[in-house]
Length: 191
Image 1 (spheres, one colour):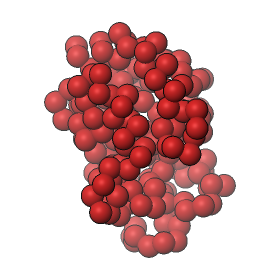
Image 2: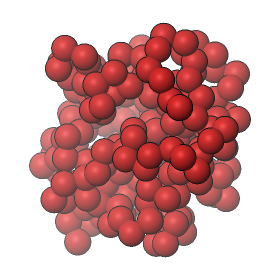
Image 3: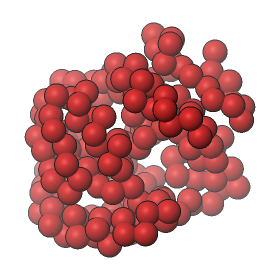
């Protein structure tokens, strides 16, 4: 059973019993066409709140605010879009386990995608893009879109830099990525 504590919590050894709605926010309206994929549940994010990008006090986290800056032009925000994590495990500071947990959790992500209308998947961060690409059988590069057959549909994947304020250059680089793919993003979420 997945218990919310301060220590690492791994669900990847029992993926068949993992609830598909855990760490999976479904998109609403046009947000049904855009899925954001993070690395793994953050300690003070939806691991405690059940809601992507929000603190236990109900405040939008800085990462969510930066994502909203990118999504605003398209009339979306993090509450409208789908959101999930590549690894469903809480790793704390033990990043050595990330790759293994992501690989073991991949079938959960594929099940979460089945029957959805997500046409655009935005991956957050270099590590997420690398592992996601390997698991999907496609070389992914930050700032370059790729077409991937995933679950039951053809989807566009756009890896961006992690929008955390810890990444000092991510905000500006992500703005450039969104400007470069403005038309493609619009087509994915509007058609």
